[in-house]
Length: 241
Image 1 (spheres, one colour):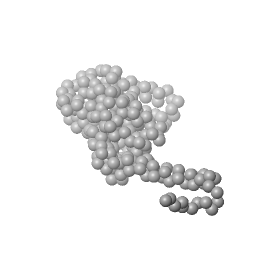
Image 2 (image 1 turned 135 degrees about the horizontal axis):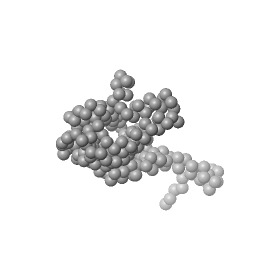
Image 3 (image 1 turned 45 degrees about the vertical axis):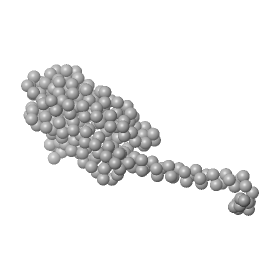
Image 4 (image 1 turned 90 degrees about the vertical axis):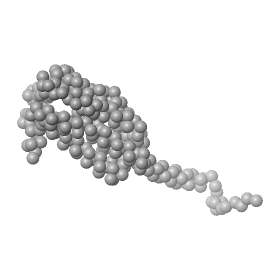
């Protein structure tokens, strides 16, 4: 099974294999990574794909995802290093249009946009993984929501692997379906987050508990301080007329 996964990953797994054999300092590893990142063509180069319009529109699901992130901005980001807002703006203004150019407009053409899209997509995918982990650790999502979100993530990764295999085989229909599923993930994730945020108040419930705990701690800190202001035995109720 692992060999099948490595095979589907294609060129990048050749780089991993070289790294395992020769180490990162190897010239072969460096050249392999450079060739992978700097590729300006896809396996569909000069192939008449006639991609459907919906496939191009799906590329902008990343932009929709970024907008939803800003609308459902959780309070845990105030206590975290995660570049949440920058991530959202990159999805809206960069990844959405760039994905459309690389996967729809220039899919069968030679263009440096493929290299840019590849590098940015890899970086943003890593950020998405970090975001999911932090969402779980900060308790901003219900267990049911987390399970559904993780299932959607797994389906998206499987779709990407199948999309890569379809490209390797130059299977146009397989690529359209599986890469469309990969681009469908941001929309599904946005829907899950929106329901958890607006319907179940996912982030708010957690922060209310934090606020209650902070208030209790503040009250506990004030009790010893009050003993210095009032003499011993004077902690009695004063009746007012």
